[in-house]
Length: 326
Image 1 (cartoon, rainbow, N blue to C red):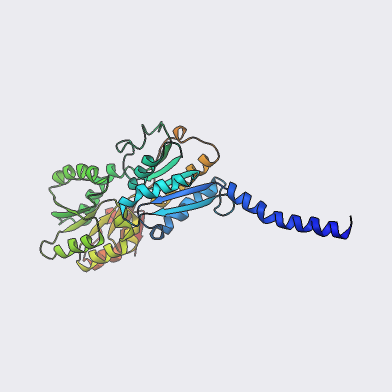
Image 2 (spheres, rainbow, N blue to C red):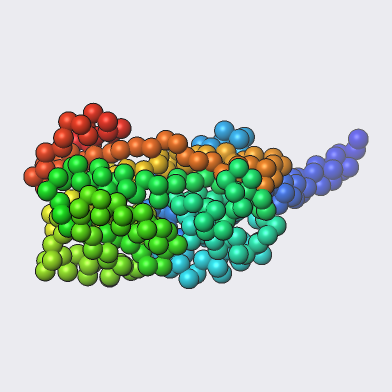
C-alpha cells in the first residue's frame, strides 16, 4: 500500500471512531428516574438501586444511561416531568414513591414502569393485582399501611406514659387516607388520643412544631412521605429541640437523630427495583413480573436520642431491634 493511501485510510478510520462511539452511546438504553423529592437526599437508596442493576448486568455509563427528573417536593410538577421522560422515549421509567408512580402511569401506557411504593399499589390503581400486574407497570411494595398499627404499638411500648400522639401527614399524599384509616382504630384500642397535623411545606412543618409549645404531644408519629424523608435532618432537629419522641417509617430519620423507625428495608427495596429494571431491559414484560412484596422489615432505635429525652428503652425492644444506634 502506498504511503498516501495508508494515511488517507488511517485518517478515515480515526474520523469514524468518534462516530462509532456516538452511535454506540445513542443505542444505549436509557432509564428515566422520576422522583418526588431530590435524589441527592437519597444516596443510600440509589446505591441500592445501582447494586440491583449491576446484579442484572447493567452499569451506568457502560451499557445503560440514566436521565433523572426530580420535583423537589413540588408534587404538581410530576406530570410534566413524567411527560418529558416519555417524550425522550426512555427505555424504562423507575418511579420512587406513590406520587411519582401515579404520574408515570398517567403519562404512558407503553413505556415500562417500575415503582417502589409504601402502600398497596392495587388500591391506588397502579396494578390490577400483585400476582399479575397487567399493563406496563410493576415494582416493589413495602405494604407500610399494614405496619401502621404495629409502629404505633412499638411507640407506646417505648413511651408507655404517652396518651396524646401527634400524627404528621402530608394532605397531598395518596397514602394519607390509608394511613389514618389504619391508625385511628389502633389508637382507640390503645386508649391513645391522636392529633392529625397536616403539613405540605417546610414552612408548615416549622409552624406545626411551634404550635407544640401551646399543646405539647407526648409523642410524634410521622407518616410516609418524600417531604419528611427529604427534610429528615430538619425534622429530627425540630423533634429534639421540642423534646418530642418521634417514630417514622424509614431508618434514615433515625440515623440523623429520630428516636425510632419501623418499616421495610428501603435500600434493599431499591436493589430489588434495580433488578426488575434490568430484567425489563433484557426483554421481560412488566405484566409478567409480580409485584415484589418487600419482606425485610427492620426496627431501629436511637438510644442516644432516648437518653436525651430521658427515656429508658425496654429490654424487650432492645432484644428485637435490628439495629441500635448508640
